[in-house]
Amino acid sequence: MKYPAVLGVDDVLPMLDQFDTIIDARSESEFALDRIPGAINCPTLDDAQRVLVGTTYKQVGAFEAKKIGAPLVAQNIARYVETLFADKPKDWKPLVYCWRGGNRSGSMALIFAKIGWPVVQLDGGYKAYRAYVAAALENPPALDFRVICGTTGSGKSRLLETLESIGAQVLDLERLAAHRGSVLGHLPGEPQPSQKMFETRIWDKLRRFDPSRPVFVESESKKVGNLRVPEVVMERMRAAPCISLQLDRPLRVQLLMEDYHHFCADPGALNAQLDHLVQLHGRARIETWQQMANTGQMPALVDQLLVEHYDPAYLRSIDRNFVHYPQAEALTLPGISKDDFIAAARHLHG
Image 1: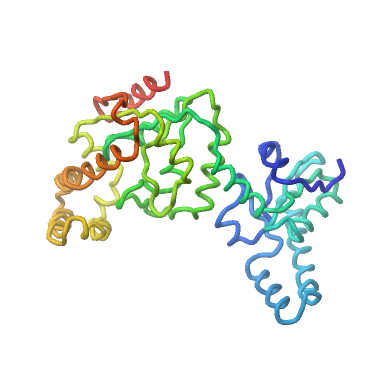
Image 2: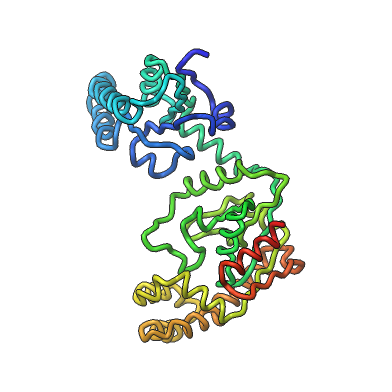
């Protein structure tokens, strides 16, 4: 094969795991929004340089912009060759892409090929990749979903983590979305990804699953925080068999106190989130709950939130959206220790 080889997404993505390194040649801000799974960022023009070249292009012309951009691109690529890739052997096989598979990735691929590396450039770049992912999520693989249902605090997320740890196939949408899926679900210090990156993460998980084995997933709503679950994936989940995870309420309170310890340590942050429930419960009720938080009555507050807010909302939603929930297999947890979750996971995983 002649290098650089310019291949389309239909050829590249099925063999994505065969590349030694996946290089995103776009700027750092483009990379932050979304990228091909496993890619590293090596901008041929960083954000500031792109602004400079783009402004020159618009105000002066293409020729002057290229005269400014070319040495910047050459300097950046040279730095990567001298540092990041200096130790790469002759058979190192990188994949390089940029926004549309044009000058940025083309320049890098050409230099790599001249060095002697069997480099592949993605034709159409990230734009073609994004279209591929969007189409794939409109027609996802036929998977044997098993939906873990259960009221808030029943241990669904812990069970998914345990299932994955013993080798089961798991689609953990909350982990992919960096959010626990409720008004209190924001993870401190961990912003949610962009919608496109969320979809990339889902696609990357789906493509790796064995269709002959079950895939365990939680009974999510259409949105996890600010992110939307792809519609067809949601439809497949809602049509799947259900498992009803059950845990006594005092243990649910204990589990939630453990999982949301950051709110116990910072009642002000909790109270700011409770303000979002004013329309549902009225200002008087919210102020009562906020006072309980301020005076350290966290277990009692969590119990009231379960009884008066989370449980009624969850049961209405589950009955409406998951058609097989009435026939769900019941799975009762006797406790919330690691051994309790391992026993439950082994029961499901077989």
